[in-house]
Each structure stands twice: as structure tokens, then as C-alpha cells.
Image 1: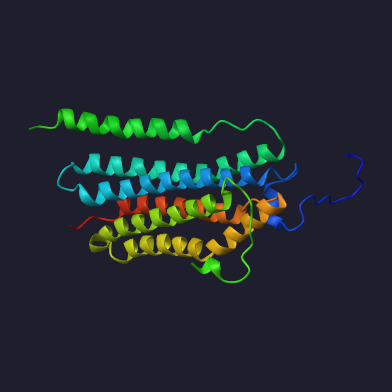
Image 2 (image 1 turned 180 degrees about the vertical axis):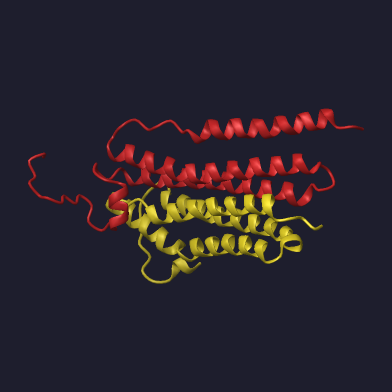
Length: 135
Length: 116
């Protein structure tokens, strides 16, 4: 197996250069796993889109409800979270794909605790705002 | 459905992986259209700049929709031949698009005045 003397071993003909470079080595995993990974990525992207829409909605719809500072803070927190989850979804997908190619344990999702903490922070800000709001 | 035309490849996967993956992409484009509709709310305040956000979102959704058939057939053939090449370009494009939208949104909130 390891005695191949070929200078450029290409175990996957039909892949473009870009994906060969990003997903180097290993063997093609079960296609079901590759497709499942893709669907999980898409679920994260939809989460990111929901945060994006949420951030925009806070900025667009709550001018009469929140003071400017709170409104902008919440909107930006949600948008930053959307960016982190959106970009993180790609790296998560890539790391899982790599782990599957090399038959190593799947990495833990870093974006899951980020989403949990980020969501909790936004909720906490809103709770404090509601509690301290003059009647 | 446009999938009916031509000799559509077939698979015998009881888990219906190609269909589920195709529907997941479809749901994602719908989420994008909803996001684009919410971006429209910014247009009275921010004009053409909000229009850019709407356009980026809709173009991404359209690009995904136009390649749905391609992606479905690739998945079906992959299941049949037991090898699917990971869709690096599609995944990277989608992720980058959402990232850029977030950045444009933050720019709007921070630097563009609300005149409403």
C-alpha cells in the first residue's frame, strides 16, 4: 500500500484542484456521510440566516421600543454571531470531512457553545433592559 | 419538476439521501428569500445600500436553485457508485455569502444613519 512511488498520487480522479487541496489524503468516505455532513452544514447556515434576519429586524423594527444603544448593541451582537456561525459552519464542515477521510474521531463543534453563549448574552441584555425599563 | 426531463439517474438508497440533501438546499434558499424580505425593510432608510444586501441574498438563493438539478444528480450517481465528491465550492460559496451579508449588515448598523 505505502510502496507507491508515484510523485503525485491522486486517489480521487474527477475532483477539482481546489477540493483536492483542501481535502488532501485519506479515502473518500461513505457517500451517505458526505451528504449528511452537507445537510448539517446547511442547518448551521440556516441558523446563521435566522440570526442575520433577527439582527436586521431588531434594527429595523424596534426604533420606538429600545433606546439607540440597546438596539444597536443587540443588532450587532446578532449580526456578529451570524457571521461567526456562517464562517464557522464552513470550517466545521471541512474538519468533519477531513476526519471522515482519515477515519479519525469527529471533532467537537466549537460553534455550538459559541451559539449557546451568544444567544444567552443577547437574552440577558434584553432581560436587564426589560427589568430596568422605567414604566 | 425539471428533474423529470432526460434520463435522470436512479438510486436505491432507502434512506433517500439525495432527496433529503436536495430539500435541505431548497430550505436554505427559502430562508435566504425570507432574509431578503426583511432586508427590504431597510430600503426606505438606507436606499440602494440595503438594495445590495437584498441583491446578494437573492443572487445566492438563485445560484443555489439553478444548480439544484446538478447537485441532485451528482448525489444520485454518488450513492450508486458509492463515492460522492464533497461539494467544496458550493459549501464555501454559501458560507462566504452569509459571512459577507453579516459584514454588510454590521456596516449598515454602525455607519449608516437611520433617518426614519
